[in-house]
Image 1 (cartoon, rainbow over the protein chains, first blue to last red):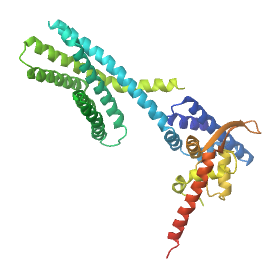
Image 2: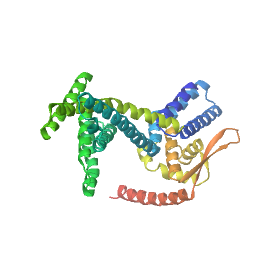
Image 3: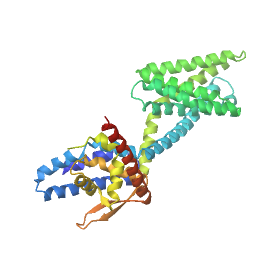
Image 4: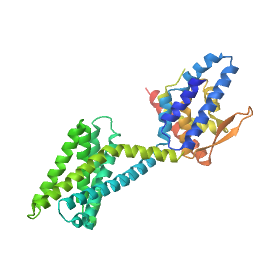
Length: 268
Length: 109
């Protein structure tokens, strides 16, 4: 009865059920059902080689059954996905913040600028918030894209924009700054668009790094007149940020799925 | 004559709750009972029964327990909860209203 065992295994494996206990219970129940069917078929006088065919014919499409179970246990799966998403966001944002600030401090030091200016608490908080919102929006965008079969990027970006209206309005109503929310949203959509529509890794990297360096230059030109070295520091700092975001966009999906797998194993 | 599974989709909860209102049963037994009571009209794919049972269990309308049967094999037995009993009566009432209305339309001239 290897075929029936394979059938049960396929149902359980494709149902995407989070709890290991639940998966084992379903496996046991489907096996028990098949045992009952086989017993009834033997009593009805069917030949052993005929019984396996009968089981497969009567049991139904394993994909359809798995989809049925997946729907029943969808809330548990979504809860775990949301938890993995939050964990990935915090983890990636924390690593990225540390890396970007370290690179920026190193650049400032090598260019003769004051390191304390880069690591000043206000700058650190703004940078960390920008990174946190970008990572959250980027991972959110990739998750939302899976909801749509066609034109997924455009639809997901629109939906994400609509979702962002809530925190933007809430922050504005509370009198808090909203700049980091706008930055995170635009940055995430830009990074995802580059990742989705530019197949070459080199072109992707060049585009992101050039865009970030130019953004640094534009920002420096808006500030009061300053020394060339200070302008260079700002551009280099934005270049480092671009490199960090580029790395994040490459790692985000992998980190999220690895954490999801790990959490699923933990619940077994 | 087999029944279109689309017809069954909305009414499987009612069918299962009604069958279980006659006593606890395990999956294979439920199918046998449904087939017998409907004169073999209900012969849907067997595996599709279990997600429906798990859905009812999650909604608290039925409860399940693993027990050894007389032949020594373990089976998962399902039975109605108080909530399920109430739902079964409610669904049955709704079913009669719907079928009554549909019949009235089908037989109107």
